[in-house]
Length: 284
Image (cartoon, rainbow, N blue to C red; front, side):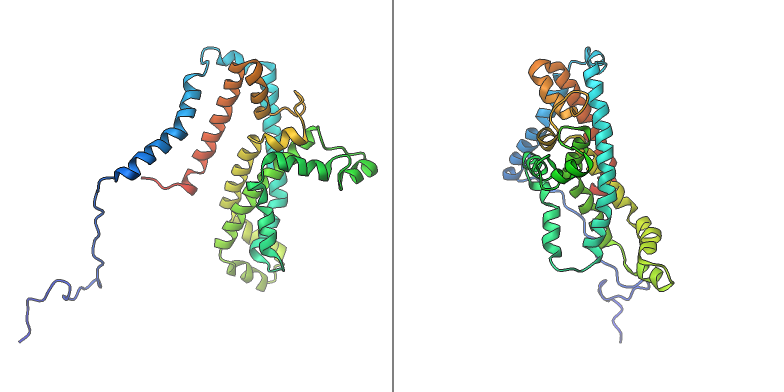
């Protein structure tokens, strides 16, 4: 006789085997983890809160209406946008080469491409001077043959910002390319499309979110660049003085103007994080 009282785990289920439901138990946070975590939170948030508390809110409109602030803001926005455009034109093909092609020394090239992420910005500015300065290995030829001088010019600001910001775009786009299925490109090529047409018609639409995220990161990094800019382009109001440089200069003469510029940069950073929230963060 068949035993009708079978255990629940052994009973057949029409819908197939069900996975046991695991309920996350709410447990107390260990004190050795809670205290350092709270200290880390305070360490990161208190300086930002101090900036908001000490901000001259009543005089903020007059500070933002000054000619120096608007010159620095305008130059920063233009140069950061131009640097992002340079990063897009050069960085997206570089990311495709790193993700889709095999060549000797690819790992070394990837390491060198990401080097500006960890390189001190001042060192990057010195390297740009040695490469693109009037006596640099490339700048000497640019000056002699074409009369082009990059250091201490607005173009030099764009070059310095693009140098430090492009790796953010390359890393983002390369990661998106590695996650994308290459079979779509292969199918396009088997149907007669060239590699460039497949890249333009198939690959670019697939990796558009990664390109957008990388462009936003590169733009924000270019907007906040200081070390390479002041080393390679100098600090000339109206020509090379961006907002970070204006903050540094105003901190010595007009602290309220420095706080006003800092608030602008803080607002831009918050906007960047809000724009990337769906990509990098998970909701509760």
